[in-house]
Length: 194
Image (cartoon, rainbow, N blue to C red; front, side, top):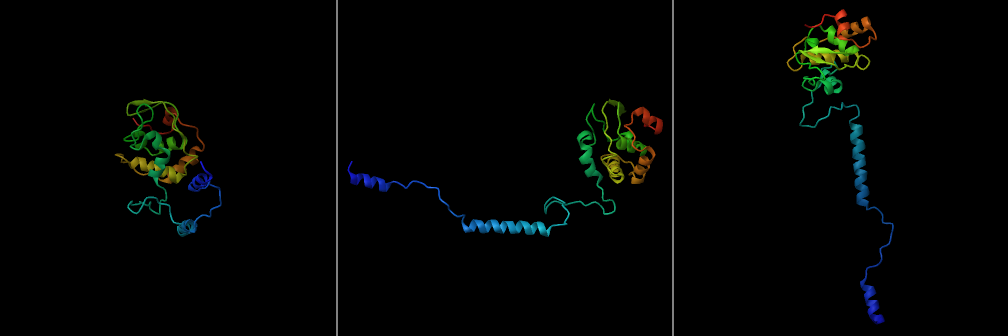
């Protein structure tokens, strides 16, 4: 191969790549700036607006201003894992709330169970359950506890009166930090369903 052919072959080859400093295109920098300004503006514009979720096609149901506590949301947050969204519970493990006389009878009984907890066996609709109901008295205010109990007493096919926060406060004043109830200790203080 002659030197002339070698030179021609070298000219045909692409140059070796090199690491260089290429600036980011101005259009990209401008676009990022516009997006940042829009995001900050959107966030600033919506400060203080309630975070209701959904989109423009989803109707958002607001709670009445007087109550301020949503019993259904509290049920979903604290109770649905055991008692299920349908209130049917889990057979043999967690008792149902639908049609339960423990829930629908004297309101002081479910207040005691949910506020202080329940330990040991309980028979609901002829089936015995051995679980433990945790106490929610230290997690929920009197208004929240009344709201969640009122929700389950009126949800599904249940048709019992709502529970007022004053009844929860009265229970807390009377029994203080009571340990978890058993069916026997509940029977000593409250009228149990038959």
